[in-house]
Length: 278
Image (cartoon, rainbow, N blue to C red; front, side):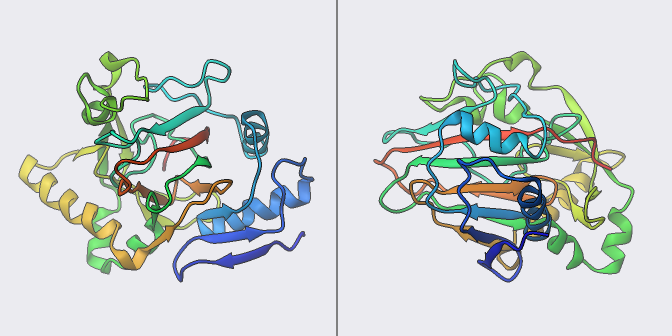
């Protein structure tokens, strides 16, 4: 097994991987070592990379098939690639607010790979929250109540006409008529690779818990939304040009901060297809 140079950035999740050029072809042993670190640390960061879209996609394909976002247009050359651009006068940014990616799909993405092309002089950090740690911190009584519950997820609030994620000047959205479609996932998800349980609800896409009255669902979800992203479960990453992050969407929520009004930020994102949560 290849030994990676891995430096954790917090006590609960996140690690910087040093000494790897992702633009170069990686052997199987290195890919497996990255996958193990990915599942262990939940989000990995690589500094000082120089990647074009094709090289970023080639790296992503070592971990699975690439997905195409159902509601946001990719680039003309590569539908799987999102050019995430925040302009100086944008009021909102793409990815603002705590969420796990595309949980409104029957098979949400396994993970995302985000590359920094242009970043503000300061600001624009991304926060990540470990959903295994959030689940582990609950009382046994609460765990027992949550196990077996099912939540409803939808993209409606984000991608229906006038939704939050449709207001960017630079991001082009599509299929607004499909955004209200609903899917159901367990409130507590078991990770398919490490076998650990984690919370699997998020404020952006989880609308209610099946079988509960509205006020009961809102009260329980409100608690879980806040608990899941408590600061003790989080890490924070400061971007530099050429930084790359890959996070495990099965165990992590994230939040792209928009504290750089008047500045431009450009990122390139690809996602890896996932499976049905269980």
